[in-house]
Length: 165
Image 1 (cartoon, rainbow, N blue to C red):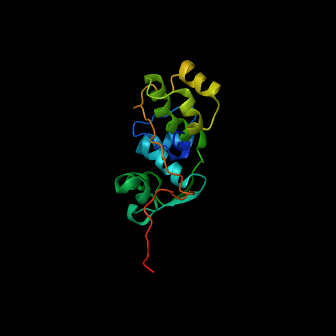
Image 2: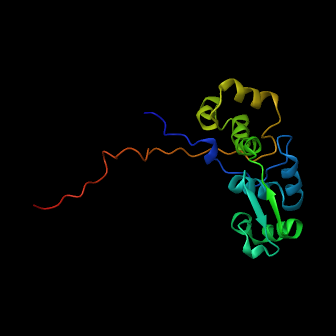
Image 3: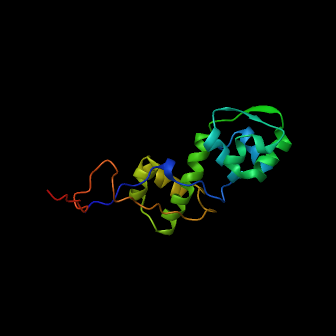
């Protein structure tokens, strides 16, 4: 039997223990100094590539929905009444999301072959990350659950409703 469909890198969660790395832009580093790396990645994931107005009152902006009222209050203190252009941050997001998978490979909970379709990259690149970098070392290992059901397919063995004639 074939294993279920793996998730993709975009389905992986942003780890709460994310760290600032060299792939972060200067603006992301500045935000992380105020609201922390995890909240910064949440903002970039939700609003990256957009110009966002930060109101003086945290209750009136979109940020509270993304990082909570505490994080939005800090952002309002720092950037009140300003428009900020948020970077896309794809490299930083991908690095943070794959860190748990890399840590799981190092612990033997996953194989590189299982990680290839999840991370969407080559075996050699994942091998290089696992064996020659410190990526994922200080992160909790994460093994994604696999879906055994493809939502595009009908279930042949699902109970059928029979209507009397």
